[in-house]
Each structure stands twice: as C-alpha cells, then as structure tokens.
Length: 281
Image (cartoon, rainbow, N blue to C red; front, side):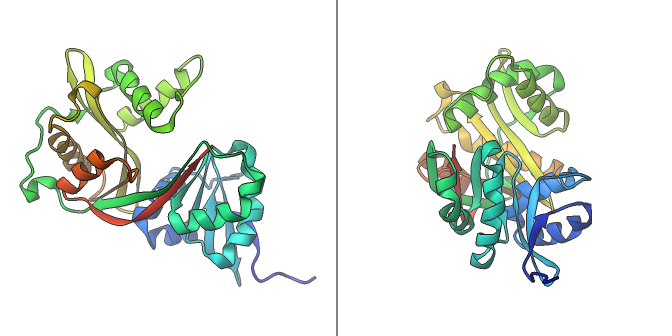
C-alpha cells in the first residue's frame, strides 16, 4: 500500500507531548490551545484537533472545538488541514489565532462556511513578564479575586462584556450553562473584580493557563466609570495578582480599533508581540 508522507489525522493521547511542544514554540500565541490540551482535550476518543505530519512527525495542527485555532501551520499544511476544517463547519463559531495562519486556512475554506458576521483582521497580541508595580504603576487596592458566592453579581458584568464584544448574548433562555462557566472561573481563582454596593464595577478573567503563560480575557469596566482614568490602576492590580497566582507571562489580544484599551495595556507595561485575527460567524 502506498503511504503518504504528509498525512493528516485526529490527534489523541499519544500526541499530547508533541502538540504541547508545538505550542511551546510560541506560548503567547498558543496558550489557549495549550490550556485545553492540559485540561485533557486530547483524551481518549477526542475529536478536538487534526494534525499534519511529515515523516511521522507532528509539524502543525488545528484545534476545532467551537473555534478553529491553528498552531504552527504554514502554506504546506493549509491545504491538508483545510480539508479537515471543512468537516467542522457546523460546530464552528469562529476562526482565531495568528493572522497569517488564520488567513491561510480561511482563504481555502471560506466558501464552505457562512458569511462572517465580523472579521477582525488585525488584533494586537500583547504581553508582559514585568509586574506593573515594578514600573511604578499604582495598583487599585479594591481589586481582588471574586468569591463563589458572587457568581450572580459577576454574571451581569460578564454578559454585558460578551454582548458588547461579540454582538449577541452569550446564552438564550436559561443561563445555567453560562453561569456554570463563570462559577468555574471563580472557583479557580481566575476572575478578579471590584465590587461596590453589591455590584461589580470591574472584572477581568484569566481564560487560559499553560506553559508558564496565561491569557487575560473578559476585561470590563462599568460604562459610567469609563473615561475617568481608572482603567490603568484597575487592570494593573488584576494583572499583578494574576501573575502571582497563575503564571509569570501575561498575554491578551485586543481589537485594533479599541484605542482606550490599547492605551491602558501599554500604560501598564504590555508590549505588542504579534497580530491575531478573528472571524466571527
């Protein structure tokens, strides 16, 4: 039987180390996927990722659970992996990841997917290893980890942030599943808040952790407090605590049109590391 030198196949338990090695080549870009793998995403029977192999060696792969996220892909692998990506079009909410890799896969599969609701082609990927206090940034002392009994006051803030960012509510009907996702972040000490008068006025989440790296997400300040110069102190405090609690290398990505957020992140010492793209369906 003729054997192809560049096969694609589903990744499984035996591929975990090789997949994490690929993620480690650029942990800032790949922490989302690394976190899912470390949480057991390539366990027995997994259909989470397709890999591209050269002479039996994993050279690149694409994560396909809810989001299509490429890891280490190049022009040589886009064609074979695109054939696998087409198979998950019915369960895909977005493409996201390094801009060139997203563009390569999207260019080969776009006719098989719905018309995107939004294309965010240039999202700065930012990161830092320096706690903001070492830069002389004043930390807002009100910021602290949320507690599990605060799930129901964190939920409205999380819902508002998601709806504003994505363009639709994070759930329809019963919010139980969404509430549980918030509870799990809080239980893990991964949501930082300021609560005043029983209401969350600031929050930030650590969405992914792995390879000594974390990715911040869900940053939100209540609308009536925006533009008052509070964001840098709030975010600096959340970032400093998260770097101590979870990982020393903090990353996030942000829309290029969000000038206030970009200014805040630069103010607290985050530097641009690359560019992401997100295609939302």
